[in-house]
Image 1 (tube, rainbow, N blue to C red):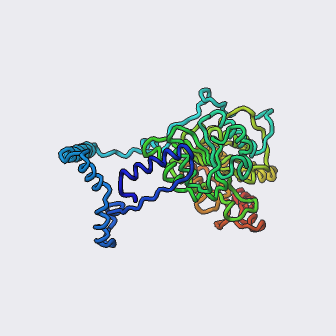
Image 2: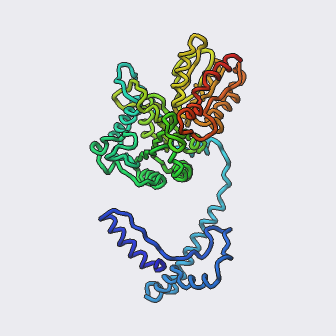
Length: 457
């Protein structure tokens, strides 16, 4: 079965009606045959000739044509006219295409096609832009994310949340606990354990004019959905101007004794993929504001949340909805002797050390907030003022974001440097499980020595 066009049509139509009445998974298997390779270079010599002949007699298109003729639905003259019309349409289309001038490469045009236009403009955004946190209630990092998510659900009735156990259970970290009661099961949906399917569904919702969020249970599991993210979400606007209005929340990071498969910092997998935005907050205030911006932005956003920050830090978070623009770094601590440029957990390591060494050196701490887009101006301004740059991140050293920052500084601020650029990052190994090994893997224990080395140059 599967080679009779009318039979297949009737059966699929019947199943489609049944699915609309009672949604459930159904597998339709058509036992058919491919008469040639999937592209021009694929050979077919390995297929026995008699097999071609056997399946050739079952050709669905040829048999449908014969049925139309036999039933009098179509005459031979009408068939020939149809073929001629189709051939003419193809030839005219080819002629028109070949007559087009060759496109001239223009960097601005090409880069402009990668992302859908989006900019928070002060005074015009429906969200308040970076309100003062003075007097605002204290909230944990995890609660700020939950609040930003809930307020985004209220602001965007077309927003659907998806993930493993995020409905009644509230997700692995309980961020969506209580959301089913507030927003209903249609908008807060449990999914199968299949990251690629969830991401594909999220993109499909966006194509239909909706918004979607997927909670990756752990950032490590994103490898199961790389094709959907890097080839579909990231490229769809460049290819045909379609928004990919999808936020992928990524619980990330080590320091919690979770071992090599639940602790990776894998933001660089996505930084180098044009079409994605990469966000990595370090404070509760930023977590809420950046998340709400992510849901306003029509582009795909990889939103990294460090697991070790969820319940370990608190900060003032305004109750009202607000936005923090992407590509706007924050100077967490001003200084004159050295710039530590970092993000995520690295911000807290840097601030702790800067405070401990306050009597020895004036250390500036720059929190990038977003890696894509990157606030190059703040990075370069800081380095030009202090003359020294230390680049800190939890990700492993090789291929880490510090390398990109080092290149930027070397290219655009080299004359202002008083010491070599230094990177401090995790070792180039998987994340160890044993606590002493994990602490040795992480860069925090090597930060002070590196700072002293740069200052003493």
